[in-house]
Image 1 (cartoon, rainbow, N blue to C red):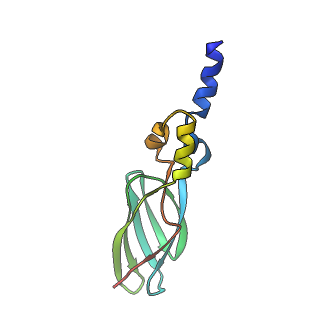
Image 2: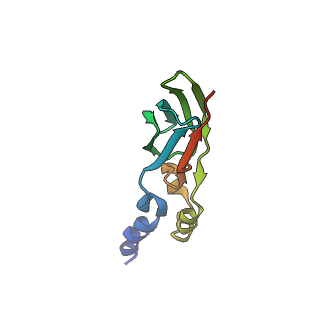
Length: 120
């Protein structure tokens, strides 16, 4: 009878890992309204994207770094902090894994939906 509960516990052991996609949409634009390209990266991947636009990036617990250039040659670089989705982590605690699985997969993390990249 104890083995009956094991699959149920394993299934419920990771809340955000089950309900969250591994990627999150991030909308980026330049502060002067121009177009251009950016190189985005975090420890989970790297992407080359056009700006303005909405792009799917892999969730991670580290910042999303950007190195950008407008079509006119202006440059911008920096990072977007990773944030924790606390409601998902709270549910994970209820399901007994104390957020361990989510911490491994980073699926409880997110970035700002929209971000304006300052250019000089």
